[in-house]
Amino acid sequence: MRADREEALWATLLMAASNTALYFSRHLLPYECAVSASLAALVIGLGAPSACRALLCGLLSGAAFHLYNGYWYIPPVAGLVFACFWWGQPKRYRLAAFLGLGVAFGLGTPILIGTLAGGSFYLRTMVAFSGTATAGLFAEGWSLPWEYFWYSEGAFGVAVVACIAFALLHALASRRPLDSRVLIWLMALGAIYACLVLFSVFLGKFVVYARTVIPMVPLFCLAGGWALRHVIAARARLKGAVAAGLALSTLFQFSPHFTRVFPKDVEIQVLRAFGNPKRSLSVSGSLYWRLDIPVTRPDLCLVNAQLIYPVKEYIGYPEGYILLRVENALTYRPYQYESHTPRERNILRTKDISICLIRLRDPAGVPDDLPYRFRYQNSSRPLGRSQTPADE
Image 1 (tube, rainbow, N blue to C red):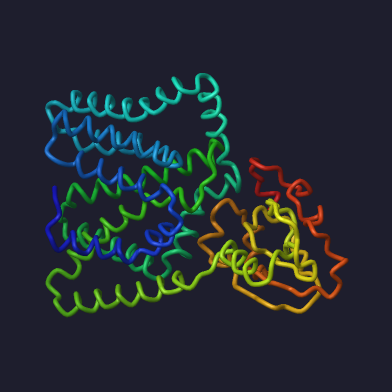
Image 2 (cartoon, rainbow, N blue to C red):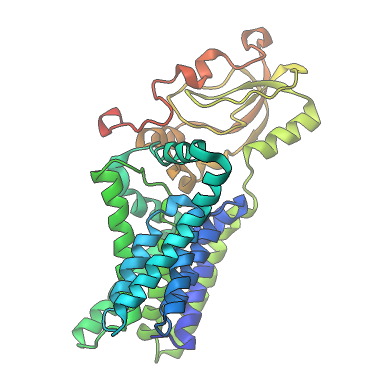
């Protein structure tokens, strides 16, 4: 069942070269922790079948959900994977029972503790929160993962998928049975995608976001490691070329992240160097958080130095002389797949959303606070509601 050292090395290199696995980590979000718990469940569960392993596997699957509940599909997918893996075992029903017990314990213990601490309010809050994954389009559930991966991984991702497809076709043509671990990885990928499509496109429960599909990346890397191991096993020179290609791809994909500047960084530097200017946006409809300190530079206006979401329409910049212009991090396309709709992404890609500090031509024409036309309350898109394709 286990891969040899060379296959494991290729899978590790692919994961290390994955842009998706890197750029989220700078934001200190729980996604990587949840994926780690899922991978630990996979490693433990695919070992020698035992009740203890099944219990621990279920516990880790349940923990993955609580680390980030956007990965609600991990427990059922884990159950499907291990049910198939243990199908030929004489004690498969016992193993399944212990897996279910572990999942129940992993899912139920935090809920029990929260209920004891917060009572019915905690349960109501959980139920209400589960219905908030609706910003975006349900209808995009089938296409968003692949569109997002195209912008996040680019040619590297296409090459990995092509290598997997070539290895699968070669194995079928040579009538060589696939290793069971490869079937498990492909089954897990298919099950995750099916869950996302079912609950977005067909049931209209959860919109699919970029962060939602992160657990698919390690599975692609595992399958890619197997494919590389078998495609270039006897080609020493090709191994070096592939390794060099991975290094170049990593350099090309990763280098922009180390110079990318975020709105809060710009705001802090402006406050230190110029004082507190007025605020504005080049789009309307976005959420607005007022900085609770008085404006000390009414002759200046800082534009787009905040989260730009949602987006109603483009309205441009106040007139004046630009003292500072910084590229907005939201121009990086993978970030645009977090709750934004196709219409909003089109505005973000075709209009100027740079972060600018402007010396106003007419300071009296821009209020100290953002005009109401910028505020979310004036947007035609209610918070927590998903638009239909017709709205796009």
